[in-house]
Image 1 (cartoon, rainbow, N blue to C red):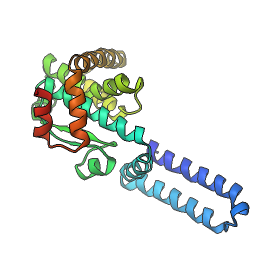
Image 2: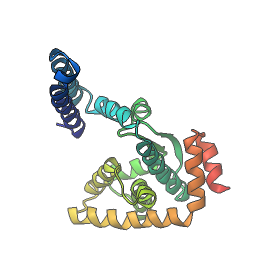
Image 3: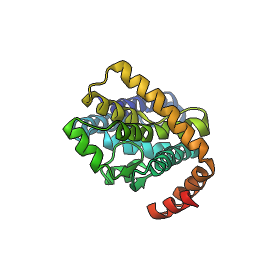
Image 4: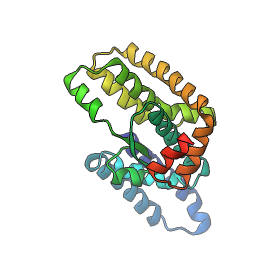
Length: 223
């Protein structure tokens, strides 16, 4: 079962418990919490088996957006990816800042950037990726976590980024110890790049917040 489905089940259990405790005080019919719980559990089951957790991700993302910090974390996370990709000369072709936008563009998670990664894909298919190409992408994948850590002193997102990095390293024959070493090394690399270009990063965050186009964001980084 996906983590998203588990989260939906946890929400349904919480709502059921809360409504049971408060129901007599607010004269709430016991039928309502029962129906709500069945609905949440049904959504969780359907989403887990039919949509690979994407529907639940959208629901949880929508609920979480009532928190200003949550939205700021996603914005700063994706700006980290965008900035580092641009600095490493990997073209960014698009970005999203919500699970709904990501789903419409076929991306996982609560947001993301789209890269022109045809060369990487071709090299992976051949199993002969160059060290320079691998280093570039590993640094980009860890840049969201790096940005969150720099701004908020911790990172709540980045599981999809870590998974992507591990999947590529598995194809290339790296060991589990190698995954951890690459994550730490490229997290440090991306942190350094963001800190060295902090003014550009801040300007990019502001541009992405007002949903500037990709070309406008690239100009902001260079200005």
